[in-house]
Length: 212
Image (cartoon, rainbow, N blue to C red; front, side, top):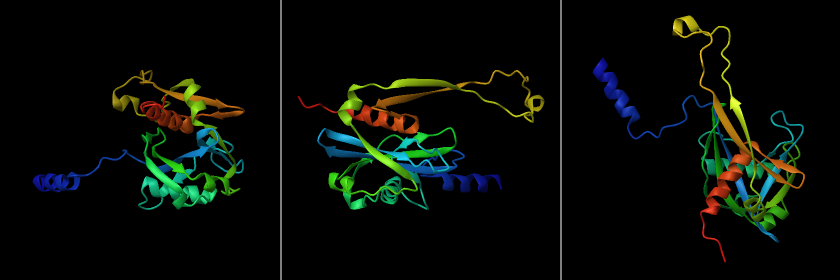
């Protein structure tokens, strides 16, 4: 049985792409670059205050993947559902780095250039989006964010089996730390996952040769 099991496991794992362990979900957002009077700008949404999750926060269009959707397919569908920007007006540039969130989900970010005309004629869905706004890329590149840093502290419940695990009740748990960039634009504050994705995009742009 042992040999059969290891042979079967070898076949199962062969060529498999590793995934996030204990994943609870997979999400994708579009990171929309729009050409305007001030050059390229990033398009952001303000989530509707009536939404159950994160009402009033600033985000990119996106949401949970359905079925076997790729990150690109999910981002395009969510952009259409939230802003009525059709996929034909979205030109995918590529994926940014993904986020393995401590809540157990994967967040993909797909950079794209969106036709200006489509943005000018978009219709944000009031159930999900209160409003949208543009931030010039040059402003974000020349105005570094404030870094918000905080500890992530494990808090085991009273039923944790300290004695069986052979550790004292005052065990020195390894603390985590997260640093979140906070961008300010006029009266807006862009932070959280959206701030991290913005920072990731800007990091790639800074690697590119700049026009002189």
